[in-house]
Image 1 (cartoon, each protein chain N blue to C red):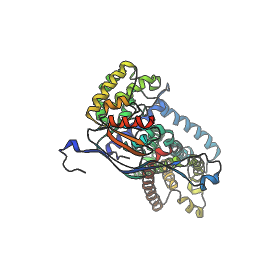
Image 2 (spheres, rainbow over the protein chains, first blue to last red):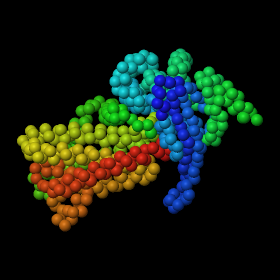
Image 3 (cartoon, helix red, strand yellow):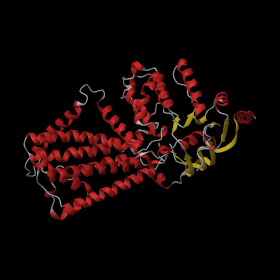
Image 4 (cartoon, one colour):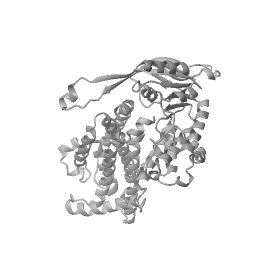
Length: 246
Length: 259
């Protein structure tokens, strides 16, 4: 990697080299014989993708369903492994994909903060430090020692979001810019998301073109597992819309 | 998968184990009291029933039983619960990247914690009834070493079955059957000494036979197991453990594609 660490701006946060990802299509196999002897059907979700995201860069990703956007995010955040190619990332990655995935219904809000924080890469000491801030932001003081199954959907999201933004990641992976809770909380979130986006390296998938223009200067257009266009967001979205109007 | 630091790994493992233990008693009125009530009831029933049915001419047969059945329960419960654990936690695995080993290992550890609680009761019982044999240093050492290797072995088998179960869901069914068979070929209900001499070599192939015979020896104070074979089994367990970690690491890269 780059030896002169002083030049922060040009440091690479995410480097993907010749990434391909193969999935096996699972069909219903009616007989045992077929299960073992029928040829496996393959599906390439990503084909030879190379991509670099510099530190502090905000990259938006657009593309139709099934283009490989989510697979790419999963590979960057380490949830799955590419079939070929290498992934190099620098720093803590937080994926704001599903905020409530790490919660356990039988534990209290407090206990869930601990577990979710650890899953997001925080240390126990860090969680302790930020504990109060997390609860404050979520606004769930009264319910924080209640078991999680008593929470409403909105409350779960609020807590999930609050933990995620306090995890202080270096790289943020976002699948559809978040909207959690009621309008008041949403406004609070959007404000905080914008602040976060300004400081972090961001890779964000969205179908909301207006929001992408606002948040990400650069944009990537994915089509059938390949990069179709990588340019300024304005240009990419224009080309993208034109492509589908034809 | 991004490599977690050792600190992260153990903090997460500890938190998950805690979660596993806490969530089990969370909504029970008697709460953690169940941790001790359960093994007491279990031992009373087992002691009563089995002492009536078989005896194998063993002095303090009920003690002999506890020494075998409590650790066996740990092994069987852990394996039964850990095997499908990766599949059960699919939503977590699809959404978050963390060392996947944590899931089966936390189940094994939480069960080990329960085994500890029940063995603690057993030790108190032994002390109160002044059956001091386990407190002889050599017996105690054997006791601790056997428990340690039982833990390692259970973790190893759990890692293997839980990772393979992601790709072949038959493994969970297979494991259930395996546990049942394994129970009867392991000297837990009966002493190894009732097995004819020429068949004992076959039993030595089962890494659990040494562990269970040693536990019984430590608790009841009689029976024996050749140390050279015990050492061999411990070594085998270490190899199986290393193999299981490598296998799990290798397979876990693709878990999220199959869930």
